[in-house]
Image: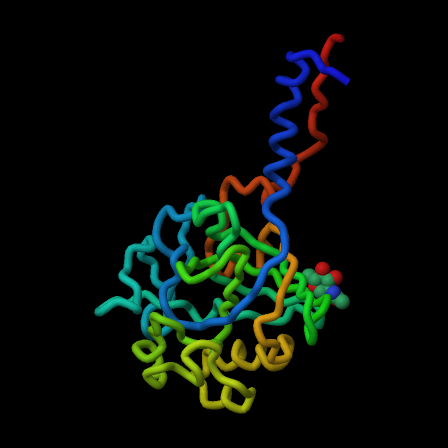
Length: 250
Ligand SMILES: *[C@@H]1O[C@H](CO)[C@@H](O)[C@H](O)[C@H]1NC(C)=O
C-alpha cells in the first residue's frame, strides 16, 4: 500500500513515539561490584534528569551538592555511593537495584538513570527478574553489560571502600568478585549488611548470570532512593488520556 506524503508526515510523530517508547532490549551479561565510589551518573547533566544520582559523604549522609563534590575514589574526594543504593528483594521473583551499564549502540546520556528489567536466563536464577537503574558506566564493560551494584561484590579498580569504611586495601574478599560466602557479611559495616546478605539469599550467590533485558519505566521505589529520574524518557511518561488519531482526506 502506498500512502500519500501528507499521510506519512501526519503519522511520522506517532511512529517515532512508538519506536522511542520501545527502548533498548536484547540479551546481556552481568557482573557485580561495590566500589563505594561516586557513580558516574552522579555528576551534573549526565542523563536527562533534573537531579544527578544521589551520593553520600564518608559517613553515608546524603550530600546536597548538585553533584559537584569530588569522588571518594580520588584523593581528597568526599562523594561516595550511598548504602541505600544496595539491592533488595521486592518478593521471591523480583528484586530492585542499581548497576553500571553499557548498552550496545547507545551512550551514557541515554542510559544514565534509565531502568532495565533483567530476566535471568541461567541457574540458579532462571526466570527471576530484577529491575536496575543505570547509575554508572565503566570503560571496562562490554556491550549489553550490567555490572550490578551489591555490597561485597568486589571493589574493582578504583576502591573507595578503604577510604569510606576502612575495608582491607584490596576490599572485602577478591578485588574482583568480592567475598564468597554469606558468613563474611557479618563483618561488614552495618549499613551494607542487608545488601551483602541479599546476594546470598534472593540472588542465591549466582556467579555473573546472563540475562535478557528490556528498558522499562523506573519504579518510584527506585527513583525515590536514587533521586534521579529521566525527564524525556518516553517510556517513563504515563499516558494522560486517549491519543488523538490523525485524520486525513484521501
Ligand atoms: C513481585 O513484585 C512485582 C513488582 O511489584 C510484581 O509485579 C509481581 O507480581 C510480584 N510477584 C509476586 C509473586 O508477588
